[in-house]
Image (cartoon, rainbow, N blue to C red; front, side):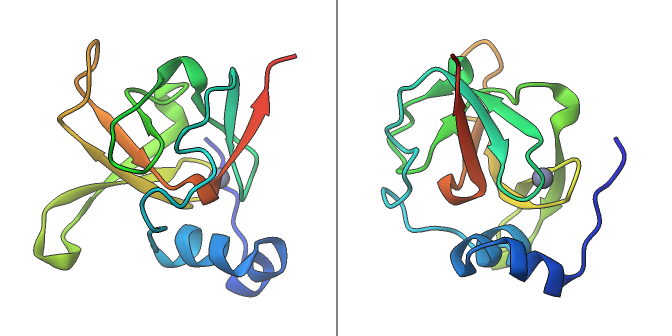
Length: 131
Ligand SMILES: [Zn+2]
């Protein structure tokens, strides 16, 4: 996928301070604070930075963690994973393939059919409901 590159100054103009903190500075929103944690609408979740489609509501499940959780991205190529050893833990970071926005982390305790749990910050997502 062709990368979308912008400077930090350009991102700051496009994003709210909270979006910038999570997407570009690897922040994490507080659990149960995000607007999509309990969202049930049918549609596509796009990246707040570049509008790329990332997840579909049919792959969303209630993990009870306080963050929107998905068992797969909308397409294998829509996200990339990176090993993250910050905070003294080996975790797998999930980023947008197109713009490298930090989205959240993926864990191995998700439901079938993948067994994966993509734990994603609401604030970096933009839901486009199906018409
Ligand atoms: Zn993006």
